[in-house]
Picture 1: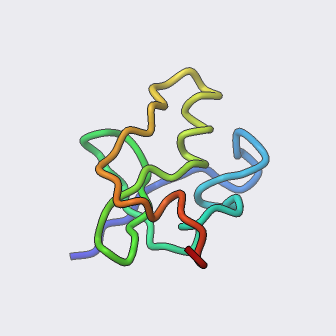
Picture 2: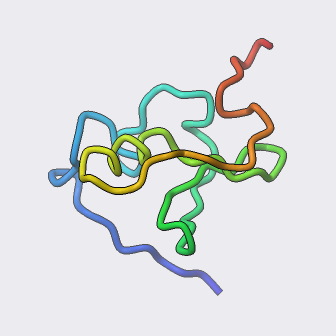
Length: 84
């Protein structure tokens, strides 16, 4: 079963980077997206199957006054450089 997430249009992004329309240059910006309804956050799923809060979603939540801690079960993929 495929579910679709309704989101905003490209002209309604809250800042210069957007998890959907214009991802910033971070280590997981090409990783698959996963909506976490229980946390209300967008994650990137690393090659090891770990969900990492997307940094552009964290920034968006901070801009609109929502929780933006970014705490997640981390294996380091969201901060390691590809050559490490």
